Amino acid sequence: SVTLLLPTASGQVIDSAIQAAQGTAGADAFSPTLVALGLFGLVSLAGSGVYVRSLLLQKAGNRIVSRTKQRLFQAVLTQDAAYFDTIKKGDILSRLSTDSQLIQGAVTTQAISVL
Image (cartoon, rainbow, N blue to C red; front, side):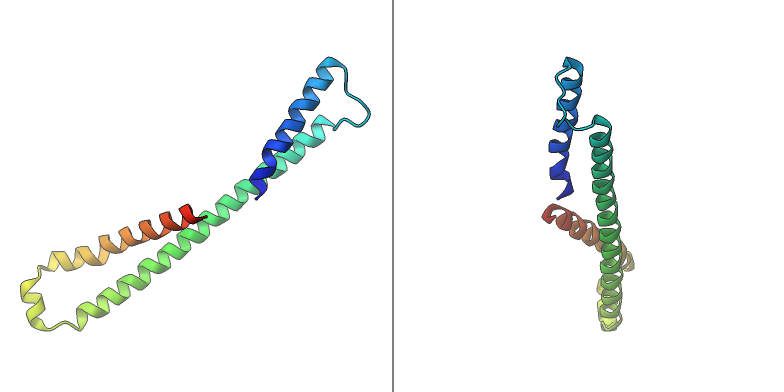
């Protein structure tokens, strides 16, 4: 992962700054500006990866919710009329809306914890 390179690059920036302050920087020392720009690039790349990952997880979560709502609605439509006499209409609507959102939250949370 790109984020594993951040401590090494940060250490090089700090070492270069200490060597420059002490006046012991040799010919093989890294340019602090170059290393800092590289560090900025690594942080930017890592941030972009997190952004893309969150977009993809959101898109997948929305698809899961949409599919779940469609399946639940189809299952409700196939029920007998007696089913609707025993179940309140608000319970059915609640299941279609809130339960599917809970599923989306659980799935995306689990996907993030796996990554």
